[in-house]
Image 1 (cartoon, rainbow, N blue to C red):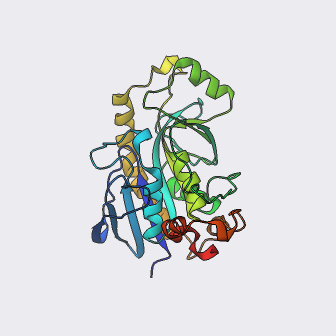
Image 2: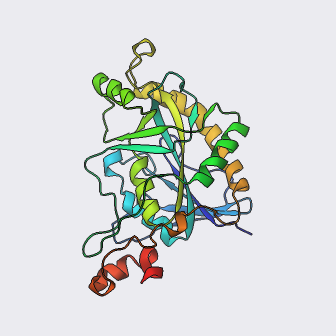
Length: 286
């Protein structure tokens, strides 16, 4: 019996999950437009899993173009209650070498052009994002990645930049001085929206380079990134298999009640269209 439906969002290099049984491709409509691609739904061992390639098959969408709201809303409509997000990142710290894996526990937001909430248009909600990652899944991810043979860093601050260009050297040094550990272009919106959708969310971050602060290692180049990433993709797949087996039947965290008391708009003032559009997320509170 499934322990809950688990979602996996694949980033650069991870475009499919082998071993899925009873596979179906699903188009999911959302009030926020089209998701990045079709959702792939199937069974991995005894767990129902939903997979989505973040950038679409063939890597078609820039980080800024990814429809994060549609992606997370689609996961919610399909009954997903936990999401594992796999992401390639640059390292801002010497100790995190290319090939290492980080399970981040904090974010810094440097994006400027992306919608990051389901709310607005007549409804206001403020969820807590003090701890933006689900501790339950993060703990199991660290254990599973270690078991799969990875060198693991069990915490770290993920700085999310706009992209698609990589950092300037001045920016890279600034982010290091801020205490950021890794840098990427995608996960922050996913975490914010998953919290609003009351879905547990955690990231498996695959370090591919030293950004450009470490001049002795050379500047970050996409061919080098992809070469290191390919080495880590199989490790990521092994980790996903391990963590899905280890997840408890039901979460013990508070992610599933993140919206409790967070909607501050008077119920009678919420427009009917907004009620209908957001029913998968807010229905139980109205």
